[in-house]
Length: 173
Length: 157
Image (tube, rainbow over all chains, first blue to last red; front, side):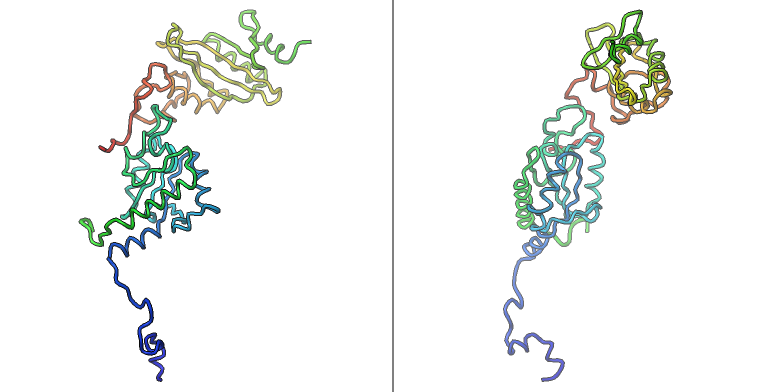
């Protein structure tokens, strides 16, 4: 044995290839699998649902189990926009700008009934659901939603991400 | 022996009638031109050092459509006073209390937003809760409760 063979794992396994040395998969499945476990949420938190957001982020519910624990407070570093709470007409331009500043790929969760549909605010001030302003991938109603509902929403979103196409080269890039 | 509130009610008598006491709160109703003088007395003589709120009430069926309402609190005497005046829609204006209470500036802006009450002497009545370009006053009873004025054009579903 010479020194340069010692670093070779195949040589260590007695000349045979060890298990899981390589695998075959589809590119979309591989990228989707990676992306669904690395959601970086941007919490756009405006109202009382924030309390429930804190509860679901930390123990014992712990969104870290889904790879969605680390909130990024810059939209440029985030790929999941969580709109948590009531959005007013005065705030809508801010929300749209935050959404536009996020890099592709990006997803949006409407957290709570106000973000979903305006909730019980039917007046001059409240936007009747953030999907009037930005596209929404998953709606989690409830006032506030139970942590189980939010976790279910994250898991469904993960399923959507895993099943969708993940183009490496797009029209714009 | 009269209570502190009753003594205050006598002191704030309007045309010889003492002010009303309701729910542990003194209610003084004055004409619009007496607002500045009454507020100055509350601030200077009677030790009411906090202006808690400026708001209004819309009574669409009344000739004097709006009640403008101020709440004062005395941190020394721990007493509360509500000052009310009625103004018509055409001349919906009352004197500003910004010279007496700094906090009046923002609260008068809010009241101007919501009810369209003018505050003579407050030079900065820009929208504070609403936004530039908002038409109308949403807390007036004749504002349609479902009228929205979006700043962002809505997406087509």
